[in-house]
Amino acid sequence: MTKIVEDNLKKIPIVKWIVKLGKSVIIPGLSGMSLYDVIELYFIGIIKGALTARAGGISFSFFMALFPFLLFILTLIPYVPIDNFQSDFLFTIQKILPPNTAHSVDVVINDIINNRYGNLLSFGFIASIFLMANGVNAILGGFEYSYHVTEMRNIIRQYFVSMGMAILLSLTLIFSVAVLVYFEIGIANLKSKGWLENDLFWIEKGQFLFFVMLIFVVVSFLYKYGTKEVKHISFFNAGAILTTLLTLLMFKLFGIYVLKFATYNQLYGSIGTLLVLMLFVWLNSIILLLGFELNASINSLRRFHIKQ
Image (cartoon, rainbow, N blue to C red; front, side):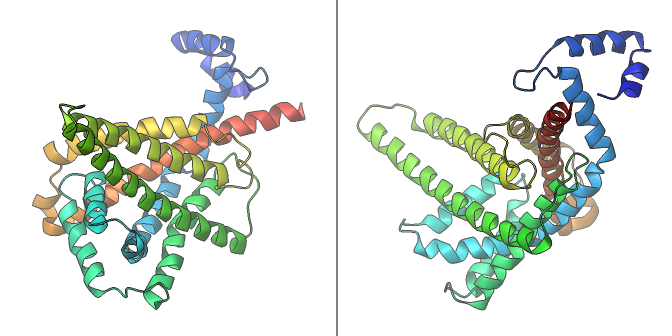
């Protein structure tokens, strides 16, 4: 794609061989574009697209929208016809959060539960919709400021799209927890009939697979409808696959880091938990942008080929 970059890379002996190999690998569906073209444009987008700065903006807005998001969810929970659904939801949130951070979040969640208005027409509930829309709007804004994105929605339309997506994502989370509850009930029934011996094994494996599927569906939804320019991509796309794999890897490595190496609590006391949580959100924001940049790079290659 960029002759200057390619010529400079070919001056390095080992890299020259890698470039040649990448040029020989043709990716299906990209009209003859090579693996090297995609990787080159991908890294150009990362370097010139101010990735970490955009991730910082997303993580700040998302962190500020986190508790309004929980207020919205907790207001809807009483309307879910499942016994003890609130405790199951809180348990799911604890499993998603990094180690040693659930306690601090529980304090805030319990405060929301004890002081919230329990009706769908309350000011707190309506305000939470607008506030959590800010978090999704920050994500979509981070997408639109990609180096490869040239078309943007107007501000008002973008905000209402963000609000609709935030509500749909909230309902998806409630539905997901409900599915997990019924899954555990189903496994318990199978064990009681003697069809399963180790119900804990099947519950853990089922929860993990469902968690992977949930990440993929949410990320694909954000990528497909997040920007005006890239919305025609397939729901099953390369960026969503990359983000899902990187997210699972990050969850594992970040958990090890918090348990073995992090010393935030020793340095900052109880506020160290919030620092860990903010770092967790920031890393997820970077991963989310990395996946989007891959889709945007592929889309840019397609546009380039059409113009030729």
